[in-house]
Length: 155
Image (cartoon, rainbow, N blue to C red; front, top):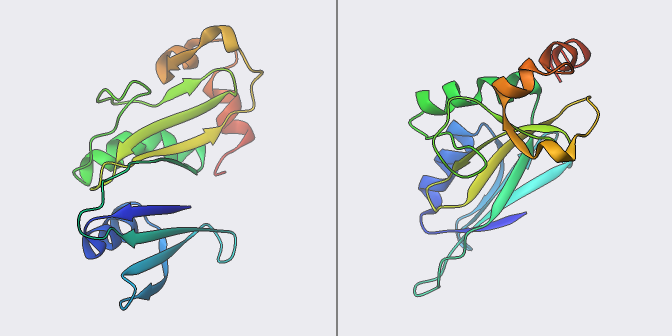
């Protein structure tokens, strides 16, 4: 995955220090930086400095994390000065569940406006008719979080 950024130093700090990705390589001459996503060689994020006059384009990128990390994300993001967002990009204090998968997600924006998502797959049956629901609603359902946390205690 590759994203265009306006300020490479600021973006390196954001993805390294706030998102927690491991810096893999910087090419100062080319104004690019690469981060490993997960284990080295598994997946990579490339940040490319936009040239002057380039029209900014924003992307949506999802990072697979554990369910406990998704549940903690709103608090963790706020502590870092980042606004956690729900599916409709409204500020939130809890994840949402995309019931058709199902998966729990929290969204946020990087300094260049790219929409980022922390997502954890759930081990419940898909329920497409439920649409997108707040975590506390999913939690109240018969197949809510106790099963997911038991099946994936640190996944």
